[in-house]
Length: 235
Image 1 (cartoon, rainbow, N blue to C red):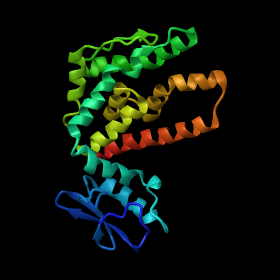
Image 2: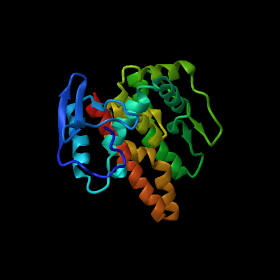
Image 3: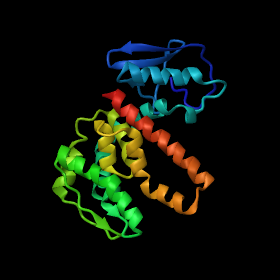
Image 4: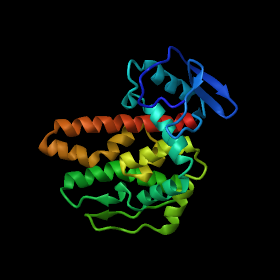
């Protein structure tokens, strides 16, 4: 049964092995997705995270406190059924990757981008055989279609749960390269998140921090870390 947004009525939460993976049971009643599909998780590690979220709910189920459950619902209800559209959408990020667009000034920012982002572009060139073009300013630059296709094929073996995590890694960072580096475990997640926020952090240094923007940045950082862990545990 789907209990998304309802009041807590159950006493116990348990993980049950099923032929396809693991399910979550509330007093022995299986959870369903919002679309009423079977809520089946690929690994016991993910199932334990989800079970802990359900067990932590008090009077009212609060989806905002349940990132693992939200990700699982997305994987089952969206990414399994709309996979082609998702892959095409993410491939578009590779064509306009954050790391390809550099500042023309001031020199301090130019040098910081080069120091932080060039190692990531060097990595994707060495590891995946894709060399990105780099431009300065806001004028668009077109990447080779063969390179974009090569990166898009990297998503083909991803399970629906991995693709869910990868989607958030790409969209939160604005960079297919950063997401791929996180998925491959090529750099620490904290380093990759900081690289994705280079321009924003520069602006904070120059003009000071906005409280609301800082809170949103923390929320996105936690979501990025969650996405990286989801991808890792779904493999």
